[in-house]
Amino acid sequence: MSSRDVVLARVRRALADVPRGQRTAGPGDPPVVRDYHRVHGSRTTAQTVDLLAENLADYRAIVHRSDPEGLPALIRRLLAERGARTVLAPPGLEAAWLAAVTSADFGVTLVEDRASDTPHELDAVDSVVTGCAVAVAETGTLVLDAGPDQGRRRITLVPDHHICVVRVPDQVVGSVPEALERLAPGRPQTWISGPSATSDIELDRVEGVHGPRTLEVILLTEQGAVH
Image (cartoon, rainbow, N blue to C red; front, top):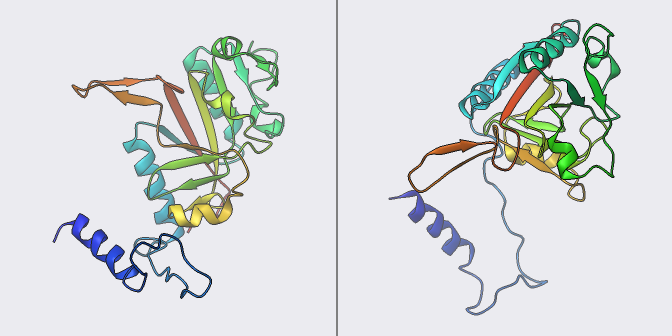
């Protein structure tokens, strides 16, 4: 039996007591059983973080690991390797993360996240550094919800280089259902699985079409926090 057959069989069983032609649930209908798997398999926290790193890399994101002490120097190194001269940072990003970037000897200009910025102005920004709302291990997905350390959606959709810091293990979950429980549905959300990419009919992959060409993810671990 194919996966398609399994899914259709479940749909038929779920609709067995619904009169033909009725498309919406009535007030007297029995509640829908939601006993599907919330997460696949059993993993320790460390295994979940490792799975996240593996799937991020599988989507061609560049994964780094750091502790709070080494984070400023790591961000500085990543920006220097890109030759970034302008860096956009949301107002709620921890100032300590950019301490090594804002020093006078580095020569990088910090750009504010302004509502008046045009796509052309954002396209001129070399790199953007943000936090995230939650990261999904099973799918290698980062979710941004325009929080203070993430800024407006467009700042992570236009500049060509995005550095995203994920707090480990607090912001890492195993599955999409677990992620949805943490997110407010009324907030703007951006779900990111690797750098922006698309393929034509011949499967030639092109990156940077509708978002950053390069996505770097820093898994920020407090000492002794992952087991």
